[in-house]
Length: 118
Image (cartoon, rainbow, N blue to C red; front, side, top):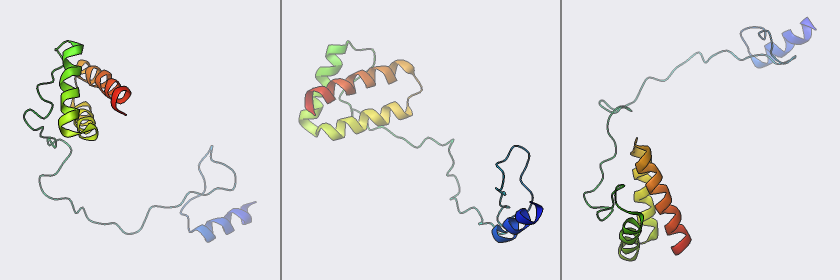
């Protein structure tokens, strides 16, 4: 068994024997001997706000409006800008929003648009 594991390790160029609990006959490969330097641009990091919504992109849509008003606004936008564009704007809003009410309202309205226009 030891010879068999030694052959497997030599063939796969691994650094150590498998740890306890690993599958039999499977060796873990060592980390790479070379690394690539970080090529990120200065000032580009996850904490930075990356989404800048256009003013009025959703035509006055707000989460606190009654459901029928929100749907009217979005139907008008679909007729003006197209179904895919309005859905993309709602998806972007849902991705950026940390408010559950906004997320829920956008989800309900997206389902309505899907059932009506698709």
